[in-house]
Image (cartoon, rainbow, N blue to C red):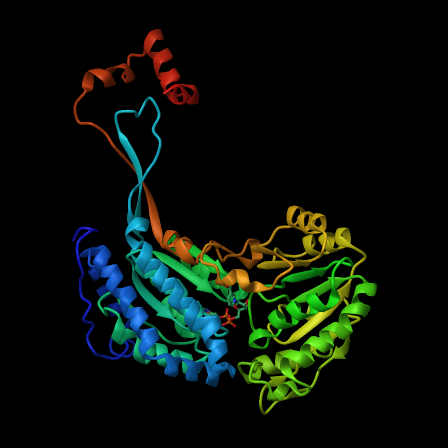
Length: 486
Ligand code: NAD
């Protein structure tokens, strides 16, 4: 079927997830056959799958909100703003732009190739695997899915086994909205995912920890499968002496404790001078009380830790440095109050591992130069935050550091912009997605040159034996100088 033809297979059969109904190898073979038959190529088919995803979001909003509340104690509002609205926006953007994204992209030619047309064709890779984590279980599973479907791939989704309620809704309901000859869900934890990764995929997008990212990349390498790795790490937040502590505190509190700190792009620790720390602490205390009340446990806007294992890990981190704010916790509810730690040593666990919880250590530095040294001595972070009234300081931090993203005087609202890529560098990952970046990530950019079958006389100068005259001509025709003359 041609890429421009109409719809295919919108009416997905009303059955359950393919999981459990046939061995994984058979499912993968079936998807490959559908891809080889060209089923996913047409713009109409791709649009029908995106519309299916949109209907899934709209028809099951309550179900999705309930699942997120059960997994992470997210309020309906929190689920909407951090997961459901963002996925819907991504689907809408892909539907609006699908045909223009799919178009061949003409590129410049040289004098040597003047009689040919050169263009880039965006082709689907084929069979794509998406593996996702538990902290934004809908967002981090379905946002990549939008790009993979828009680019015309067959897709296998492997959601996190940790966010159980979300996994259940995805497995039981989503497949009804997508063409099951081109889409499948595989469930399971490390063991099952390890077995799944033994199979050959044409592209893998993995979101999760750097530790598991290495396992995924090693498995992909066996098949030379390209990967996008969306990983985590420690995101520094430098607070300059020249800024208003209350403004900084409001923004840091809002984004550090969002989803109870279980956000890959959240500020992980603050770097500031001892003087700024003195001014910042009461401001942080004030912001926490204003946002979550005097007993934050009762706030509908504060989540809970995902499971017992993570709770125990975070409780251990509360023993680092000295608790300046918060520190209260309750194992039965998996509740940890918004906490600030001071007098923290670089060598303590809270400064060695990604915190991924509602704990914010403050480490003292003497100014921007020392902050830059501190940051550059560590792995490259996913996000880097700087607060300062001085644009010179903000620019200095931007120019002398490296990170997946950089944010001045703000939290992670950049995450909501499809015009900006989401992706890490070095230890925080490789590749990017969101908006058109997702479409491009899941498309092979095929270099195409179509030449005229005739006009052989004109081509003859290119063939041996090479005389002085045609050597000169070919050299000139190849040079950039000839291109600028034309
Ligand atoms: P994780 O790496 O433990 O798990 C992620 C996925 O990998 C899950 O689906 C899980 O089933 C699977 N998995 C786990 N162990 C495996 C193994 N041994 N072999 C194969 N597959 C395995 O991560 P998590 O705990 O779910 O999520 C937290 C991490 O994810 C944090 O490091 C966080 O920073 C990162 N994260 C990154 C982003 C981003 O966009 N860069 C977003 C969210 C979370």
